[in-house]
Amino acid sequence: MTELLWDEAIKRAKSLDALEKPEGSLFGLPISTKEHHGTKGDNVTSNASYVAWIGSKHGSIQLYDILWDAGCVYFARTTQPQSIMHLETSSNIYGRTINPYNRNLTPGGSSGGESALIGIRGSILVNLHNRRVKFADLTRVLAATLVAAFVVLLLTVVYTVSSRHANAFPLVDKRPT
Image 1 (tube, helix red, strand yellow):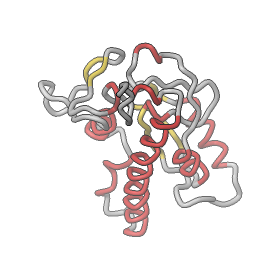
Image 2: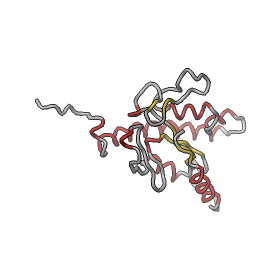
Image 3: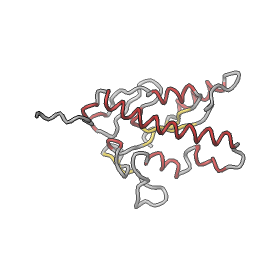
Image 4: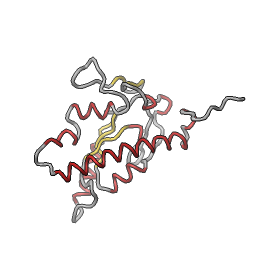
């Protein structure tokens, strides 16, 4: 985990509790996010595990705005490998993310921080086996997760191409011919 958003999560939860009735399909659902996507809030930074990008201002992405409007509560930001594209989660900033079940292994790449969080039972996803969870709730969470994963993939490509970091991942060979 790169950042625990404790104060922000409590503030958001209190603002949602103050509403007369629940609003949004993800009302009050605690969600963790990858560090490189940024998040809602003031003074948000993101670095995608590049040392040179430490402290770079980064606002929210459209997916997180949609989830926010649906009523979610962001509570943590998790690690990812440098460039977000690797088979293990290791970076020069956060070090190696460890698999909570076997310290000799990593929890995987790209979403390794998220999977480690699930492994230590720090995510709402570990509670989905509870019989008190209604099927409609489970379906909504799984559908939102699948849509979110697809949108994150698309937005990552768009961000890479159109942002100030476009030269980090050149998609066109710019060598002179």
